[in-house]
Image 1: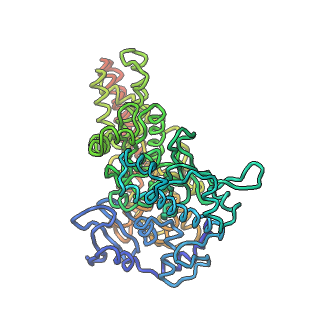
Image 2 (image 1 turned 45 degrees about the horizontal axis):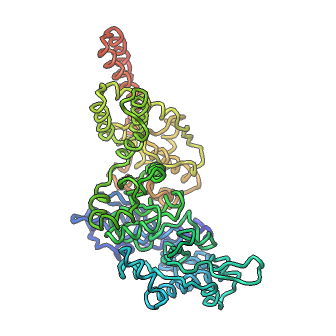
Image 3 (image 1 turned 45 degrees about the vertical axis):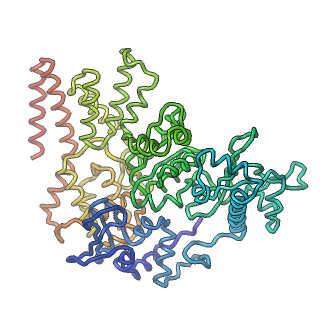
Length: 602
């Protein structure tokens, strides 16, 4: 792991770098007032909506909502980790970070053993590829690939190769390296007697696996005969970890960044098939479920992820789990639905590239639509018990949606399909949403910042509350005193939007470390990409330099009245249901309660 860079060194780099100069090397900027404007590098646009503030040393796009400081700009544009961005900027600013660098430049040095493992994989990749495309010994392997629809361009692009049917081909080829190190790298295997080594891969088509910088770090070898397993994969090694590797990410990254869209597959064969159909932004997990490391890579580089897994039961279950994880970190999730029993590679070979592109990829459905299909499985909706179970499961999913229009759409679909009162469905959904809110962990302002994960709130907020919270944060970014006033006013209450509460908690911790008001430094402090974008967006808002006590009171009143407004809406729904059941006395009683609550807001 990379040694942590001291905060004072990060601040030294930040002070020495002008964000306008760095971004100006990638974006044509024009000065407009106090800021600079240009075409956003993260999404296609014809009218400039990308703004850079030299005063605050931050950027924000009002189109795609990308935002951050000079570190996050390079992370978003180049796919750097924070450490890599810091190394790059430190070199530019001539600042010594106190961490060793490779002679080549911006990345942390690695040990001699790890470098030899990388070198060995690189040399074997090139030699396996040469054997496949240039020798008679591999003619049967090359013909197999061509018969399966692989073009020579695809073979070249993915550096597909062939491991000869010999026991010691790789052993001899890698003889300049220490054999025990090559065994640790997963390329060769020691005999049971321990007196000699032999090749791990023999008579197999070789698919190299790359890290995100384009270095070969492992292989998957496909048998050409009856050998088992069908695919033989490298074991996990010091340079290869399945949990943090996404196949094809190094080549897909430019397309992903341009479109802010990734297409996620279960394995490398499906990724290659998708590439043959022109889906350049495709990546795949390496025979493992989606992990937190995968989530971080996907979230950092794209906002929308389309899941395209196998259409069998295991694939549908995996797609549901992956979708929930991605939605949990605020990604927009879609699912591409394949016909029963087919995986993307099979579908491509059966129906061709155009159908895979247009009838599967472009016809992907929102994750909520996929959930409706998921929950129908194994249920007979003509059976009353199954029907009620299905409706309750779907209402539970709807209750987690953060968009009011989306909620209304799916509630109306349920109402129409099952001839159920829309008001009754809304009341049930609101009850479920209330339970979920109650069951959320308490958000203590004194809790460690690392405990916060950003989630969309189940209940949608009226714009007034949303705006009040954003304006409070805008003023708190400028003044520690405002933060303390807000903390005193809230006491044990919290912001109503989870992201805003997380930012408030970070601000408390930021100022407690002795930092002064500095948007760019605060962005480095929080590190979470989604929160950084929200902070940059808020900090670009036009607000008064000074906030009066009355203005502050008004914002806090909007924030604190949210729960009362939620209670009013719930009682109004109960009042409508009482009227529908002709219980007018109960409706009148609830109406009085609503009036009292409304008066308490004034």
